[in-house]
Amino acid sequence: MNQVLNLFKNAKEFCPKVLTHSVPFLIFEEIEKITKATLKLKNHPFNFLLNHVNAGKNTYQVSAPFSLIDGSFLHAYLIYLGQYYFFKYHGASFERSRRVVRLRKNNNHFDHYDLWVNYAQKGASNPPHVHQADLSGVIYYTDCKNNPTILKKEYKFYGQKKDILIFPSDFLHEVKSSTTKKVRITLAFNLYLTQPL
Image (cartoon, rainbow, N blue to C red; front, side):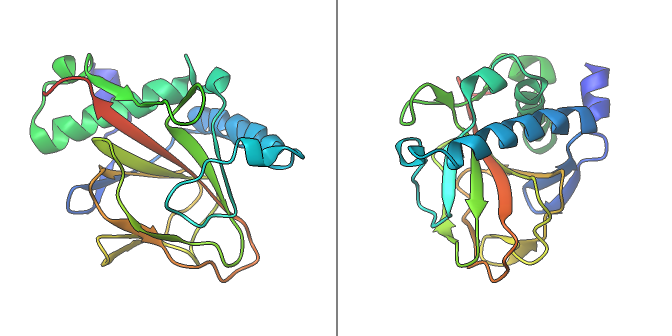
């Protein structure tokens, strides 16, 4: 367990109840594979069949392919990050939380986990919203210095490539309309507890 706690020793509190971390290089390589796979889906003539529609006005959203998540180091990393969050903010035992923190299975979007990629071109936005889970997060695939994630209408996080944010799912968050030509690419995810800690 010390190795896992050591993995998150550089996690920082960005604002109250929000943690940021830098995704390790080898795990980010898996994120690159996922993003390349979803880019193929985005560019497919039938991309509308897999469009992940939610509260946002992103150019395109698509669930990460199940085959690239199941059994991946990214999958384990996100679960352990959730455990670390509950350890840090709720004093939950790392051993106990190990059995109850899960990456949510998304029954609304075929057979995928609740982990999806957002492609935001100029004019795209994500209005203030919350998620229906216990913890939610954003992984920054591209630098987002011109389009920060705004939490609780006051905290602006200017994510850089490989940054990750994790926060309670009921935290209001948004992204204002993009004003640049550069495509903003992020991954979003939801974690849940299978039982109270």
